[in-house]
Length: 157
Image 1 (tube, rainbow, N blue to C red):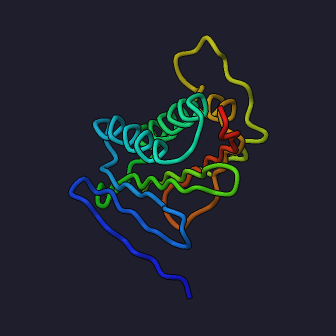
Image 2: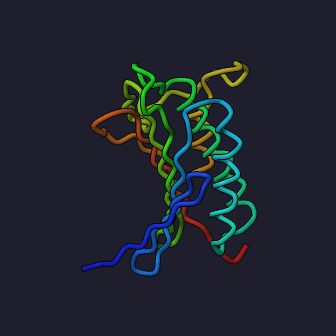
Image 3: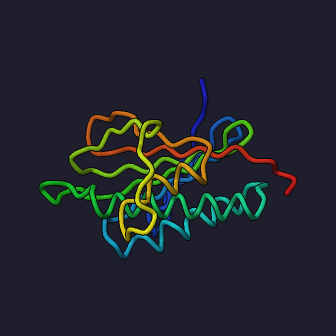
């Protein structure tokens, strides 16, 4: 049986340590004001991992795009419990980031996602995430939308 310790700070950050792998978790209101905090949380959690600078910047940008999609498209219908949950966890050879909102749900096969009009002001988020990350998935969840970003890294650079 594995042991999990959880700790929550005043900012809503929870950390779980299971089998020597730390899972960082942040729950924030699903609002534009939370985007900076989500990116800063990602930067802090990634800073604790032995990742290269380029990988960290790629991940922070992808997390920002996913969080922006939560704010723009993932609002809860009734406005209650309208949050974005961000989890960052090391995996073998990299890191996995999960962002989940409580909106109406979006389930895309990003493997077949078309290339957007790159001169457009909108509609490039998934394209940017796919370009920067090794994996972008939108698995079905009971409520809302879940975006899973995976980055495998060479930790020497």
